[in-house]
Length: 278
Image 1 (cartoon, rainbow, N blue to C red):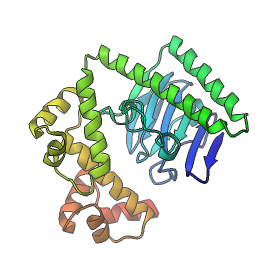
Image 2 (tube, rainbow, N blue to C red):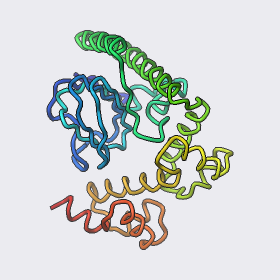
Image 3 (tube, rainbow, N blue to C red):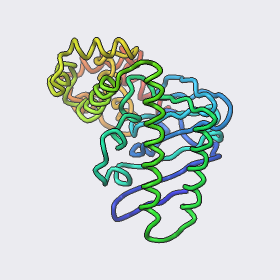
């Protein structure tokens, strides 16, 4: 099920019972789509950017446009996918926009456990989506957008509730959201935590202390992971030389780029390219 507006470039899609949904790193083409994935089947694994995560029954995970994922049982997943043109053409509140909590508010991969009561409500909402796709009029896109906002609000509430149980203050979640979003938009030019700390009017130590209490990733590791993820994408999808990729990612010289890539990916850029294209 999909609606696409050629004039605005907006795309909204729902996938269900599709054994080909997702894809290993290097095979995903819809890089501009945000994803909300709900596992309605048995427990399974989801590999996100090369890291395995447990994806339990009735759990929901969200994926930003830069993430690649592969599911153990993709046919058991219902997914809502959309681009910024579809949802962010409206100036939404930060928490429920596509730069909100459920997409950038977690220092770790966000996976929310949904109880039976909430699962029934989400399934009912899914059915309303299906019914709306059957309508073919000029109000359909607006209606689907309203339903998507409702879904995002519901998931945001579940995420907040989950973090209340974990005793993570909402102010700290907002700092994480701001930091992750800044990294997403500035990682090519800002490679140091100090750059982001200055923008957020925080000290690097404050950010490091915060992330150490709620995440296994440090602020610097988040920057490095994003740089290497983009490097992998450029190595796979373009014919740019290693030197050109290094410059594209803000490195003035190739050796520092090579060292960072090997540290994170445990391989050299040239070997990675050969393996992915062989």
